[in-house]
Length: 596
Image (cartoon, rainbow, N blue to C red; front, side):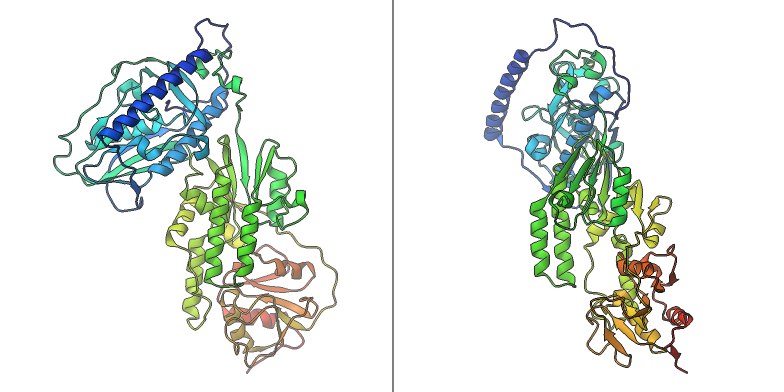
């Protein structure tokens, strides 16, 4: 299998006249027949001699020292004719990397490439990539994995591992590992790479935007290099040059990508979840006719459900209705708040991300991803070798949890501020993915401020609303929760006497509002509002505040609400009861009085 692929965009070589020595289908059938014989022979031989084990994945973030590193470009040139095969190779590397990243190999145990990567089938998400076969680079399911085996072999030489089995390529590509004798070809299952060490070691594999990185980690003993044995194969020193579809120009060959109708240009895939009007407008404006859209459910098509994304004008729309049904069923059985609900929602996010992953085409070299799916796609390696943007629907997990910890420290008596934190590994995965993202797309000014030089700040969508007469009450448009700023509001109202209406249940204790004139809003929560206040620690979807702005009501909101650039909103620091009190006094409502 070949170890080279490249980005689209280069020139296509001139078409050559037909040749009599072109490969034909009968020769391909004969090759597969021979391969079947060799595979069966390997299967029975391993059964008799002892089949190498399938090993266990460990913690790839452990502090074990790196003893060897190999790096190689994912894309080596820009020829459009081979784009689909180049992109397919990268996809195959993603799948194989997931099988090997963090793999633990005990001392004395033989590592087998195929025993741990497994057979390359479409069912396992392998696709057509570049494979070096009989002197030509051709399309093949799982093609391109030799780049990974080459890198493993190179690392083995660096680290002094015993090379139990290795086969060199019979042909070479310019610039490849075969030119310097550091290559190791693999072909399921009889052309394998097998390694062993006298100490425990670990494999780490990752794909950046443009590189494959392979590392071996461990603590070699002093005699670890003494057992090194380099396997040999025909033409190991100077293999003949191979032809590729990019260089030979023989489009009449049945193996040429044009014969299979493979695409020659990249697309964008939009991996979306919960609908938001600002993001919907962005998708409508930015998508191209060749793009693919991934939705839980196409609400525009079925006229039901909350997923009102603009689905027209895409080359393909893919849905996951079964996941929607499961999520709806589980959500209805859970409490409206609490740790169990958050854990269940994270599990459903992972399920949706996994469902999307299986269907994203290899030619999607750029993704636009809803944030809740991001850490799961990152951990599964889906984002490797791709650029991606993130539709930011909330604070990053790490920042969110720091904010909640600060709120819990300020109000240790609160029963709601310390009830759930996401797993640290998940937060770390999101942090790493966000650091790599091309841009953070959001209308939320607080989130955008965290993006450094990469925010795409969208305008908030103001809903249409009818004109209402000015009310007399201060409205808190949320449940009584610590993260919504209930403690700060209570402290301020003990100094500034105003009648308060609340729009949700009291979850901080039944007597929380004692000493303050409190009532519940009716069905029309804005009807009696003179002003609206939300001094939240966390607020990702300030829809009610936007509704109040559209209705002409003054709004006091913390910076956490993300409305810094919205006219009619007075912004105060998070957790600052004094600033809130002063803002309430400045409203100069008729019923305002201040305690002396």
